[in-house]
Image (cartoon, rainbow, N blue to C red; front, side):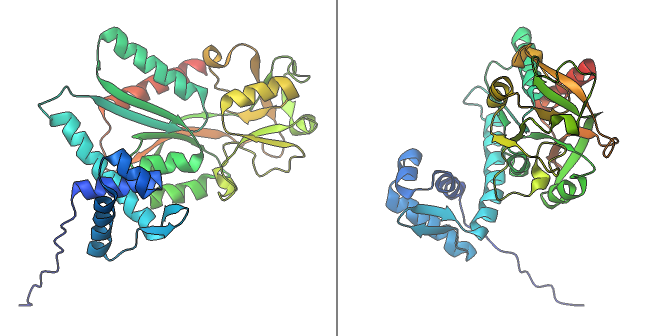
Length: 322
């Protein structure tokens, strides 16, 4: 019989050290991190060195301008966040010395219906007298950040879309991050613009008619692949492009410059106001192109009650507005 050799590794790293590494990675300065974490700088430096020595890894690049994560450090911190988040959840759920604070976070592309569903959930809890102690978060952000937030469990759920154009690429990214995509709704493309736009009264709008006007696109970072773009026809050649980072700026530019954006047509007038409309987009070349909006979640991770409730609110909203 072959001899069994035990090659298991006995780690001595502590949760406190994990917290220090995560804190320094987010703040980018040992001096500021020591103040925020209430620990002396020598102790903080020693803790990081201990972790680096234990795992034989260099976590940070150090310079006169501060410190940044190495490539190995980025991977390490991603795992560290998941471990520490589970530890915090354990304390929140089972610490008998304090009231249990419910936590939930969702990250999404720039969709007003995600925010509206979040508001509806909060109203539902308020009326029912539930969750008097909670820490909830909704993050409208770049596509890659949505994926990273769910992968590192900063957010429980992420909302984004797939199309024939980006499906293969995004699916591979999700798989590499141990994430799954679940469809919620499939919809055609609409042109979202100011109600007094020259094209606002049309039954549908073509790409040729849009050419004189600037298209609005959410900035996805110059280093990101254009497959991360939130706009369904991002691969097209546009004469005039304006990149923004938030929906409020988009609305201002629609009024001030007759700009437009291509979207799902699922708009919350309660949040965006009644001065904007969605007109069907018609394009012979891509007539079958559709947006499939869905949510991403971590594989083998059970959603919290708040996460499940949010998805129900989202499904109800999407069903009622189509």
